[in-house]
Image 1 (cartoon, helix red, strand yellow):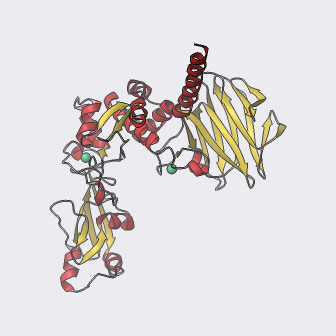
Image 2 (cartoon, protein in one colour; image 1 turned 90 degrees about the vertical axis):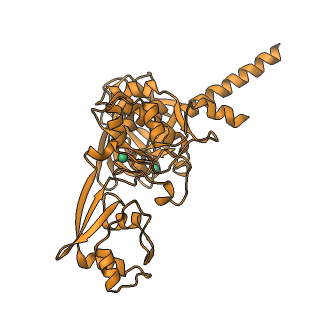
Image 3 (cartoon, helix red, strand yellow; image 1 turned 45 degrees about the vertical axis):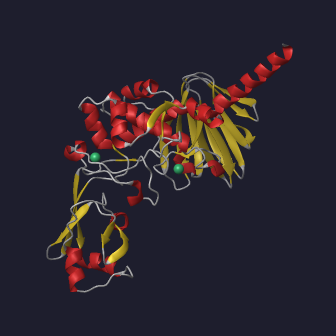
Length: 390
Ligand SMILES: [Zn+2]
Ligand SMILES: [Zn+2]
């Protein structure tokens, strides 16, 4: 009986540490870039500064510290006095709702100023600071939901964005592991500016969907791609990236057609456009192709620009010409080529403006998700581990 008790205790201890690791995410602040200095101001709750698990300083509400780097050491200053130099400091929250404001200056002199939940990890290298916010997954999800979708949307829409943000974070938690964090706070991963502060529906949406993630038929977390506006039809993933995925398949979408980013126009000087096309080695420039590239009217979304330019993808033109989408027609006038397009973004997966309008029309979060992602399942994240152990 005693042995059984010890085994159970060992298992529960293991589960406890597992739970902590799974419920926290380390987010590289300002994309993990180096900083010249940082000030931390405790806005709510209290904190302690620790080095090697030893307490260096108490930080009650409204207290402030300054951090700079000397070689590979972090210099900690409090009330104008240097407290010491340390290899790695953790500004550790002491209450459930503790928050701090971080004002940081990047090596590029760019400043950032946001309020973060939970903990801050600080280390130094070559006279620069590197900052990581260790946040609970759910607070991170709420922060991403606000940064990626803004204010004044329906609760059901915020639930969709929260489920996507959570799925993305858990599917990509090794993306920056060599840099000492899980995900960065830029669009490279997902935009994150600390806690959600401006829209009361976002914490509710995050809480209502707590732990819910999207998986495919093999119970793998999906690549939850999304974009601003598809222009009336979403795209297969292989049109934009090389890999086809069974749940990222194109489908018609009329919901986004009346939304702000449904249409765009851009003029490019004729010579610039022709020189761009000529720079592609398989471009056979003659009069016939000249008229083709000046009057381009595809009736549906195409992957490549023309038969005479086999390797030129629409997505490449979008990137090189700085267009809002890869779905456009072309005509010419005297000096310019006129691009008239629909949509904004890569067009794969969920169309945000379509989803916003679906939510306004009364569709529920799960209906919106199943409209844009084919044959996916919404499950509690703990079942992923359950199925893995089978
Ligand atoms: Zn990233
Ligand atoms: Zn759309």
